[in-house]
Amino acid sequence: MNEKRVSIGMVGYKFMGKAHSHAYRDLPMFFPGAPAPVMTAICGRSVQGVARAAKQYGWDGYVTDWRELLERDDIDLIDINAPSDAHKEIALAAAKAGKHLFCEKPLALTLADSREMLKAAEAAGVKHMIGFNYRFAPAVQLAKKLVTEGRLGRIYHFRAWFLQDWIVDPEFPLVWRLQKEVAGSGSHGDLGAHLIDLAHFLVGELSEVIGMSETFVKERPLPESMEGLSAKGSKDAPRGQVTVDDATLFLARFASGALGSFEATRFAPGHRCTNSFEINGSKGSVKFDFERMNELQVYFTEDGEDVQGFRRVLATDPAHAYSDAWWPPGHTIGYEHTFIHEVLELMQAFEENRQPVPNFTDGVKCQQVLEAVELSVRERRWVRVDEL
Image (cartoon, rainbow, N blue to C red; front, side, top):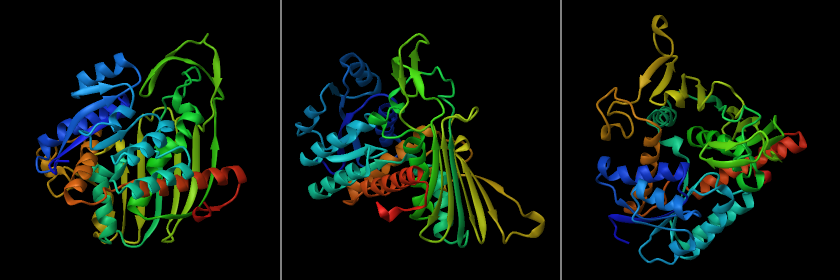
């Protein structure tokens, strides 16, 4: 592998495939000092679909069997953004072949599978990264900085909610994200996983949880086609069972003693992608909403009494993470930039010969909390995370 170039073979070409491709393509333009990702080959099951994606996204070639990527000497890293049920098989085989790994979340369908993937990556001595892109918004990085520097004081509360509404219509088709055997879980593993990772990143590890969940619509029409978060179907189509949660809520205690509350739902009309958190400490608070991703609301108790209140900090000045590579202050960035920053971390890990962060270890920790909550829901009790 050329130390200034990392050759990519990517499995998956739809929603996350497009986001990753955009990041690989644009990274060298804005962060020229980092090793350059080389978009060598993309893989998908539909030859027409993957051929079209390869041309549109800028890949040098395409295949329809991911195993072909592992046999190629000109590919250094396997990017896995296929549906969740495919993650484990591809990752284990890629690690055995000596390929570095970049896998979308959740890492696998189960905690046992996640641990097996981490063990395989460590045994192979390859680099491994998991796709928790929301960490890489400059405003989130600012929240982390304020916590780490102690400027919020002792942390008392972390509350987080991820609200969407794209399946509120009971006639929306039964897409793969609503099938447990493919997705692993519903809003809990899809949306809640991001909240758990943000909690780990910003405040620390969770020690115990108690939760509840609900599936509001039990059956849906089978889809005629699906892509990303959209699908087409007919009311007259045969119906199938929804086997995941529509909403999951849980309370938590952090190892530090802080308290947490988490809500993930796809049944919140008017909320397209409300990924939010609030942190309260002895010296201040911060609030973040991804729908206003360039902003962090900040409050400090030490401000003068006549000017106390939440202030809006626009995280676009050079003082904020990544911002000096983008536009003049006040010129905002978007969702796709979180993936560019994520890939920057991945490429810098190659240059510095270290593991990128977050990696499969973080994926296992997240899966451990997800399953602790699921156990709590089933047994209707508090569950310590280290029980699993």
